Length: 161
View (tube, rainbow, N blue to C red):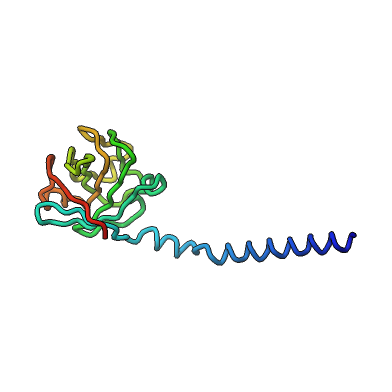
């Protein structure tokens, strides 16, 4: 009976070790994780007035919290689109940001309700809010909002990538 019990415990221990080893191999190395985290993932396009912005979507709470923090910048014509479950007056700050951005709040009808331009990292811990309820927030490289002609009332369309 002791031999059977010892054999089962040994077998369970080996399974646990193999499983743990497998999990370690499957998890990204720290350097690889950082590279993935900072890379841009094109996931959709916002189109308006014959212009387009390629966007990366942040719709999970961890993505929304992280946002563009820690990144070195955004290419012109690209942005991060934060999508919420319901409209609200969502505030954004510049915690962990390394470059200035424009923030554009968009309502459920894809109409721009507020634009804040040239927000620099040094404004942290100030929080920026929209003038009206919004369902989405678009973060762009500083100067892109004006350069693309985005203003309150601009109507956008979303196309999946």
